[in-house]
Image 1 (cartoon, rainbow, N blue to C red):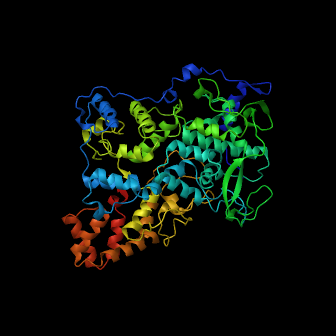
Image 2: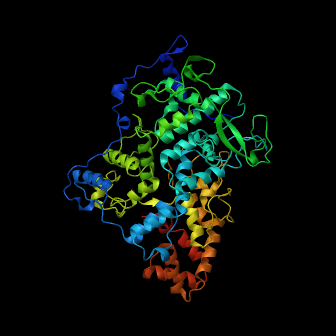
Image 3: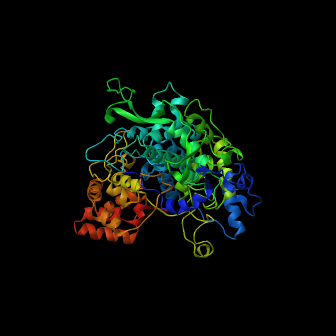
Amino acid sequence: MMRVRRAFFIPFLVLASTLCHGGQAEEPKYDYEKQAKHWSFLPVLRQDAGSLKDPSWAKHPLDTFVLAKLEECGLAPNPPASEHTLKRRASYALAGLPPDWEACEDTGYEAYIDQLLASPSFGERWARLWLDVARYAEDQAHIVGNNASLTYPNAWKFREWVINALNDDLPYDEFLKLQLAADLVSPECEDKQIALGFMGLGPKYYRRGDLAVMADEWEDRVDTLSRGVLGLTVACSRCHDHFSDPIPTSDYYAIAGVFASTDMFNKPMGEGAEKDKDGSSKKPDNSLHLVREAKSMKDLPVYIRGDVKNPGSTVKRGFLSILGGGQRQEFSGKDSGRLELAEAVANRNNPLTARVWVNRVWAEMMGKPLVATTSNFGVLGEKPSHPELLDDLSARFMEEGNWSLKWLAKEIALSSTFRQSSEANPAKMAKDPGNHLLWRMERRRLSAEMLRDSLYSAAGNLDTSAIGGKSFDAHDPEANRRAIYARSSRLELDPFLALFDFPDPNLHSPGRKETTTPLQKLFLLNSQIVTRQAEAFVKRLDGEKGGDCQVEEAYRILFGRKPDTKEIQVGQDYLAKGKLSDYTQALLCTNEFSWVD
């Protein structure tokens, strides 16, 4: 079974026929000079927010752009959140975990940010963002019987590599280059080649000798790279010249040719692995699934209307024409072109790569992106709410920050914009109900992984003793490692993850969707994951003498505050009936536990 084509494929076939003559693809007549003026194709440069009426609020450069917009619209930013709220917000944003209130009580805010950035939990939290972008999974959407030949038993090693790379603060440009061409960047370093799982762990289909099947696999690679890293829907040009963006079919096949010149293979693990003639491992269990150079290089023809039985003119492997001033950068042809592609993607002069990543990180930190269409910076995508802010932060990310995620996360965390309260002021809501001007912080529900981790953390059961390791089932109540290590399946998504909006790993994910359903609350009321952690939480409270002390200790552990008079009374009512585990479960089901202000 092959992946279903996009819903707009059939209507586009009719329109695409107007671009073809005599079985050959006609080069589109794009006005590259005009289209290069689209905001996302302009150079990434430092910006100036201009004069401000009251600049005292702006603690960091990014604040000046937020404040300028607010002043222009007659709004003022919200007052700062309390230190308690800020620390909880920062802990989830940077580490994906609730704060240890005892450990951070006497720590200043900036020092606390530094602690979070240095914590191994940082890489575990931020790896999930990249794994969503990379459509990371450990199997396929189609498995016949017990045939495990297309599964990836050791995919977790790529996940571990990503976590370690982020904890080591590997610069983002190097992070990208290694995932596209580690074997060409550092051929002598075997450990770095695990990064090639970025493409190597993509979907594989049966009948892989069939050209039509391989064409679908190439499309997946082009789509993952272009939407995930460049914010462009290049795969739309597989069958027709792009109707809104300056991306001809020849550009699509220039990049697809790079992936057509690579092989996916099982790299043997250990000296005892049994090998085939081509050097690959016979058993997936003893291998890393990566990409490597093919025996022969391929420049692909433009397949008219995407039909592999109707080849047109051959296109030399290369990069996007719009990023070369209308002239496609052609690769040397000596190898697949992966290294040249990696260098073109992770280039300071590429106007897309830094903008797209900075926008994704901003969305994770702030609760909403500056560009709403995080994987489409083309003409049909949304314009940035704060274009000067996005450009200035992207330029500084590359220059001052040296492509460092930790630099970028700290820059946002220390800003006055991040420190605002989430209070929904009625007058401001009337002017800007969608908070497009960033006058307050967004309230956010915990992701599936953060919720699961928080439940185990509250009970004192979360195992954070080691980084990496094999996968477990997220719905297994006995598994107490962080949810980043939960199995990600294309065939059957884990029911716990699916319930709380985990993305489909068959495709690149532009971002998490957030749904609210009765099933989510029913799960919290009935799941063994929750009931067992509620019972374990009771044991943490057993040392406290008297109902009031137990209630106060529960609030201190979960919320980092003292309960008010009404909350104490509710707790006492539960305890008087001997229902302490019911009480702790009720606390674990509250909005205060599962939402971040």
